[in-house]
Length: 212
Image (cartoon, rainbow, N blue to C red; front, side, top):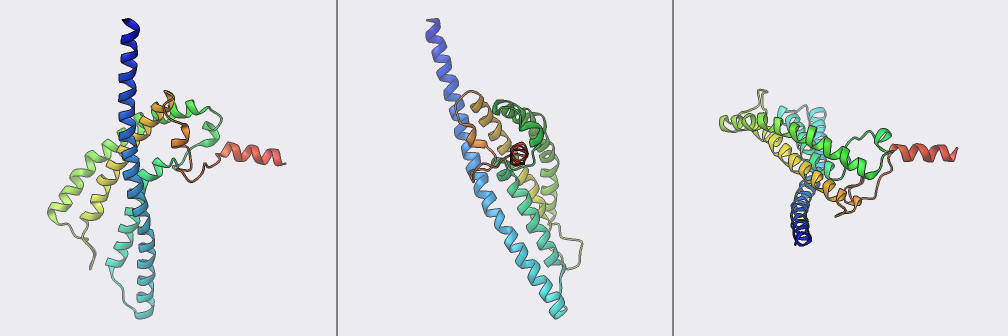
């Protein structure tokens, strides 16, 4: 009876973990789509910058709206691509230090970092950013610059982006725990994000020393 109860407990535990993994993959899919879409804002920003420069120097015409639009587009790219960057594990890491440890140690480092730093940071920023954006929306805030744009869409990007980043942080923690329990391969969150793994700084340094 005891062994049967233990098996039942393990089955229930696995089912809960698999449900969490399904939730994590939904988050991954959403942030990947949002990130890939937001990446196109860079092209639009380049086009806006080019048109602004041509009209300014070619026809002596300019507007603060063009400049602010460039800032908004850059902000949108940076903020909305951040969760996708985390999903692809392409954020800045101190690989010279962590690169010598095993994948299990890496997983624990990511779990602790997510629980102690990433998730609390996202919650604190959301706590301040949500009323910040709502106040701007309800007041119809406009730029203080002459000919400037409405401000609230740019401010709304902050809570939206950090909510997505919060979700992605939860997804990464779920995947690390699943990896530690042998339910998924570490390749699901290795550096490279599906574009092929990227050698860390230790691999590069060791390869260079071997070549010499």
